Amino acid sequence: MPPEEIQIIEDFLTFIENARATLPTADPFWANLQSFRTQLETVEDRPLKLALFIQSWCREFQVTIDPATMHQLRVSVLKKGQEIPTPTAGQKASKVYNKAVITESINNALPKQST
Image (cartoon, rainbow, N blue to C red; front, side, top):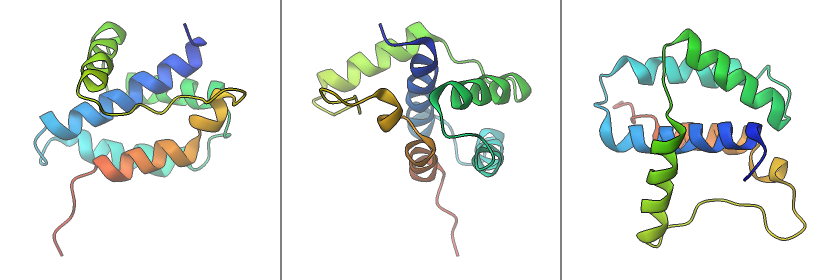
């Protein structure tokens, strides 16, 4: 079992990926997620600080992430042959779950704006 802060980040990333497939583009979640991305820039790039920020943001915007559901979604992803980023041997999870990875996941999930 990964440390709690890593689990929180992993669940959040899974939640975002699932929202991308299940929430309509007009859902207020996407505007809130853009706010998250902006606020993330000021957070220290350490898993514990990132996890605390995620928890705080989720409480503020009443986003509920069920760890059991997120685990089932990850199992489903693995069964489909897709990859979930995990540390390689000798690599710390902080190298996998950092602000750059979270920001990239958000950028990939946000609905594309028509220009």
